[in-house]
Length: 508
Image (cartoon, rainbow, N blue to C red; front, side, top):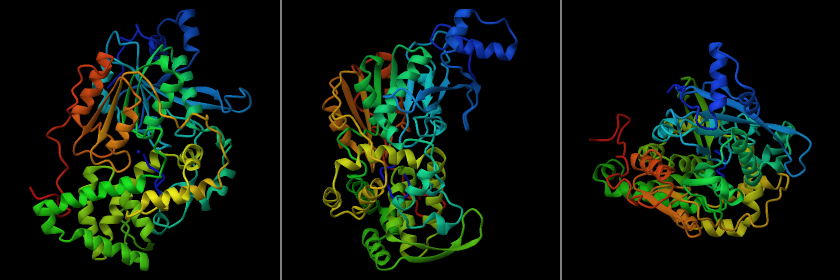
């Protein structure tokens, strides 16, 4: 979940034996169109018209998939006016007689396009028996996206890439280019879209897997359509009591403190980077007094460039580097070099993260959600209080408040921010080192989920699907249909990756 950061916006071939589940007709039609076999029956044709899925390929995915669109009213309450198309991608199960309840993936952000994520390899155990369904939420990907170049942090030059600007400065310009009512891109509306997709595909019940903001979306779907959910997996839990990005400075500081403490206790890291915390504080004070004037070769083009780096932008990028422990293992090296006025590692790491964020995420949709569901629920005084004593400060929350002042005011249900109460079997997963949805948020959600299990995975950051034990728990939940019998222990031998002491890697 890119929790309101000032710049960023929370990682097999189809088989023919799928005739016994709701996608059977659609898959048969796709196969017939390729082979020239006999025409489908009238019943099959009627079913196919509910959503026309055709064979397609996803970027970076070897498995053949089925893709289609579903039209919905932008204004669902009025049920008239402009319609928007939702992109739907189905990866059929491998089994000859799959289970009837698929796994629906709900992406993070807010603003990430589900169909552009590359998480399918992590779902191979589940795909043996179940279809996997990706739906680009309205406002993302290929579902009437709220994209705008001025909001996109991926820019050609380093000066543009690290420019210190706020979303509030460009929102009016972006809104002129959208054929959309930005008030109608909230989570509650999108989850009714999702239920339309479920019905159009012919599934009676689904299993939900939400990551980061996707866990909020899953909770909202569970509240609005409880009879349609068999099980739910919430990975990197963002409960209804978490306002983006009010608590980001506090939670990010926790992750950074854990990293600093781990380095100080690691003999090799402590020797390579002595007094790292004090030297980083001195670096931040230096950037506060005067932005750094940087001259270096662009890591991709090799062309020398000049740019100015402020404390605010530096901290925003540092926050993003904490999401993944593998990336964070380079942070001490980066901080050490930056303290010596060598900004090359910082630039290289930042550009690597930006490409993925820009490829998958709509910043406009982030604002559509956060300005309706988060910013109205906290004050500037709340932001100052929650960020007190942190390096990151209240700027993330204050920047969002300023941006939302230029955003059209949307309405959310009066009970939207109440905890979701449910007895749906739910597995909650938290990474020990997560800078945005740390384990206490999982505990908060668990209190009103009466049939749930919360598992904290050591050594991991934002999202846990990278751990084999987490993937096993996910598969076991779907097989059992409940949390009974699931082991609460996961990754007992996992720990933070070793710190890099040079670009060649960590010392063995």
